[in-house]
Amino acid sequence: MSLKEKIDLSKLPKHIAIIMDGNGRWAKSKFLPRFIGHTNGVKTVKNIVELSRKLNIKVLTLYAFSTENWQRPQEEISGLISLLITYLKSEIESMIKNQISFRILGDISRFSKEVQDEIENVCNKTKDNSGLVLNIALNYGARQEIIKAFKSLYKNKIDNPTEEDISNCLYTKGLPDPDLLIRTSGEMRISNFLLWQIAYAEIYITNVLWPDFSEEEFYKAILEYQKRDRRFGSI
Ligand code: IPE
Ligand code: IPE
Ligand code: MG
Image (cartoon, protein in one colour):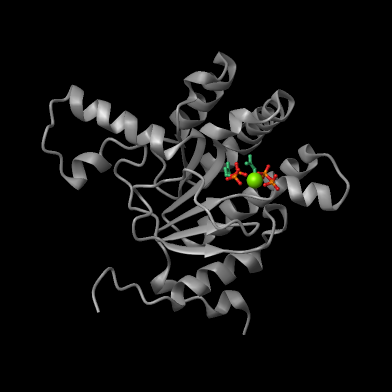
């Protein structure tokens, strides 16, 4: 039986969130520049989006650029942004055809007008699609998101907020929380990702580097998730 056949289709995570890490180390291990690691990382993104869609996963959230990643060399940052633009231009038709709804989590106001326009174009053209919701976390930081929520509660004079009020102020408004959080390349940390939303996510960390995260590795993560006993504080 293949790994794919072992997956219980009635017990799939509704929302999978991924910290795509290890592009730099992948390149380094092959004596290649970091940028080549990122271009190979984009191939993995395309593959995982396609597989998620075929499995009928409702929401896929990919961490592409954190609020802390501005500390990287300017050249690497520009390389990552140009890869994003190329990705959007090459994928928009396929997103429309496959009913993928593209969204951004994060503050894109720090990017150039050209970048913002391209992102908004893809968001607008795919916003009514009813299939997979594809969130790309870009200039995203969970603490920054929580500050934004506090400000919005204050502005709207909600002085006794419920969990729902807070969830409604986050970029993930209206979406279910992640059931499964995957991190590649072995670091045992969250790196300021979705702190509120992952309260009860199952965490899966693999040593595999993101450019090597294949179809089989994705199925392994889902199978591991399906073995977990999710008690939510109960017995
Ligand atoms: C993940 O790979 C991609 C981004 C953070 C944009 P890294 O670039 O962090 O790769 P490592 O961690 O240096 O190997
Ligand atoms: C987390 O990876 C951010 C993204 C995947 C975009 P990093 O490589 O930036 O995280 P740290 O520095 O190892 O915590
Ligand atoms: Mg990293």
